[in-house]
Length: 50
Image (cartoon, rainbow, N blue to C red; front, side, top):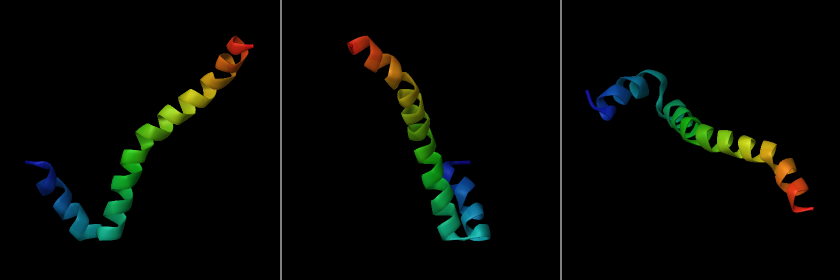
């Protein structure tokens, strides 16, 4: 079963806007994790420059 066949029943059951929202949240999640990790490392980087 390919990706379209997997997502199609979900889209028809819950509606297109909700499906788009979940898709975008899934894509942004990885980028947010990277941003949080970078922010945690920021103080160390600042102190190493001084």
